[in-house]
Image 1 (tube, one colour):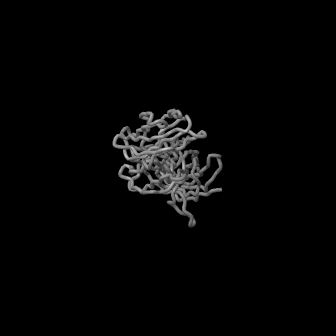
Image 2: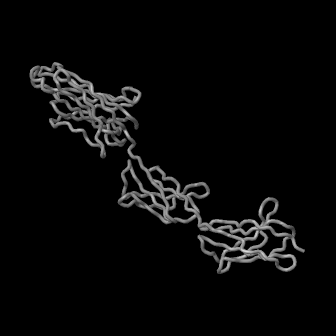
Length: 331
């Protein structure tokens, strides 16, 4: 059974106020002290798992506990110099007692705090406070049982967004929804099925990082063992088309193809004239595009069959093939 060790409570005459966790008020529960007309309140803050306390050389998570007691209007007729004592135990989601108790003794009216040094795992828990009031002779005069739910969270909950604009990718690093500045985020690229770190960027004041990257790969961001979604940066789309086909000599054809990329003509690139053969495509000629993105090839089919123009693509441009066209054997 996981244990949390008792800590000493410190009395305070301050009126209890529910503490704030982030932008939300902490849990708090109140039970009446019926006989003396007062009440008892227990507040346990949600905490993040961190090594911020130590017992017997073992580091654990500090869980602050606050018990507030009001004696009410009836106590003066029953006893003098009243004090309180309380014990707080912690139970897991299955209802099992998972901690040694924390106690407060001989406390005055008002709030008192204590701390559990807990070795409990991340999860949801409920604390139970057993509160007793006493008179000057130490006799118990009233009692209440008050509970409060709380959670132990992971020390960090990192999230990384991922988006792309052109060849720029960016990400925002957050921890429990709060942007983190000044953190070194790794950028990874997927190649041959493996993710490899290619660069690091430091987050700005709002947690953002960005980087210019090459086309034709998938990228992701990573920090603290967490990963963003993958972002693909596609190659530039290309289009290769048949412009014309004309008879050339007695047995041949002159075929003209044209290559564009991103809507603009692409010169100086080799395109392939292919024929269909055995269910596949075989290259029979090739040529390099001119200033207008065009080039021509002469071929003499030995049998009637389908042909097409093909661009194989390069590091930044995607491959493409034209619609097929039919050439008959001549001669």
